[in-house]
Image 1 (cartoon, helix red, strand yellow):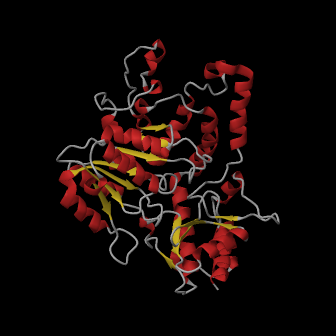
Image 2 (cartoon, rainbow, N blue to C red):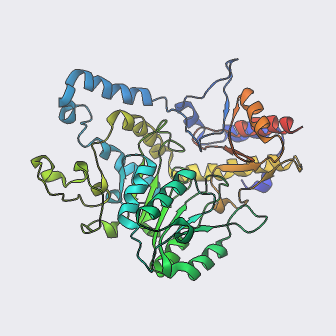
Image 3 (cartoon, helix red, strand yellow):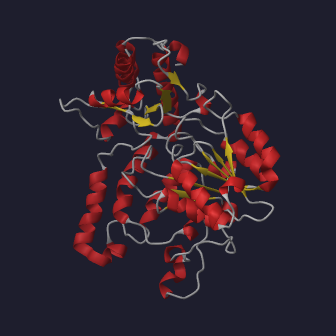
Amino acid sequence: MTAGQFQLGEEFARAMDAGDPLAGFRDLFCIPKTKSGEECVYLCGHSLGLQPKSAASYLEQELRDWSELGVEGHFHAKNPWMPYHRLLTQQTAELVGAQAAEVVVMNSLTVNLHLMMASFYRPSRLRHKLVIERGAFPSDQYAVKSQIRFHGFEPATSLIELTARQGESCIRDEDITELIEREGESVALILLGGVNYATGQVFDMAEITKLGHKKGCVVAFDLAHAAGNIPLQLHDWGPDFAVWCNYKYLNGGPGCVAGCFVHARHAYAEAVPRFAGWWGHEEETRFQMGPEFHPMVGAEGWQLSNPPILALAPLRASLEIFSEAGVERLRAKSVLLTSYMEFLLQQNNSAKFSIVTPCEPERRGAQLSIRLPQRGRQICDQLAAEGVIGDWREPDTFRVAAVPLYNSYSDVFRFVKKFSAALR
């Protein structure tokens, strides 16, 4: 099936759902309902993923073990808590294309970003600049500006923002290349979103990493909108580090524990400065409670405290589902769902909105960002009242994402039908 084979009409959507080999995964999630009891059209997995139905049983198991075992649950629970975070390691590694020792589930995204920058943003008088994209998620902007100031520099002279050309929404690959070539020798860190949260643009992470390293820069990515959305090959691409949250496409629940990647070439880098905590200390001697810190090998060496078991349990439930579905199968369906949504939206032939997300499948994930310069917030609120859930980002962008694990072609059809009516 290609975009040229899409058809109008609800019958086509139903036929696509009937032939969808992943359709059954929808039944594994709790779909919000309208006041009348109908299932919502939930297109907001880019903001908060839906709850796996199995999350409750995973959580109840840990609550039961806590109730019955108390502190002994660390060693004698059904899933002992001491090594609990490692129950997520292999599946996390597969999702982001990493070796198991390169990933760890810990903290929250911005905390991990600060921990990584403490180690890998080491500005000097000649190499102090930090590159992000203009319009990066605000928390990233706050974090990098605070890091620049912490090191005694100023964002006005040390922060470089990649910017789209006048009249364009997305940043051109050639402009990224030109900036790195021009500024690279003064750049300490390149930190971009793998997928831009506002436009949905996917950056060429492999090429950016290669270009940055050629110039001697540390290269890193915020994968909040990429993990669980697009296939990743972090080990092969070679960025120095990456961070992401697990509550969007990965359905770990609101405020879920985040993920972190540190490339294997830094696995034994004990001399790399870092903020240390006891859970990052080598496991064999951790409970000797010695005064000197000896980091674990790999990403686990950046851990601070013992992991929050009750927060990890729902994420385990979701990663089990991801593992069963398979990244490549999910990506194939995602490309079709998003292309189908674009096809239906284009039938409006209306100047009242535009799609700012790139049209090439390789340059986007599940998200489409729709610019609505007039009445946009009103339309978003109207759709929400009718059971169609996307989200609004100021000043003029309505974001929707058809998530392949639980969204259907019928969801997409219903959304576009209601959206078109609201436009009129």
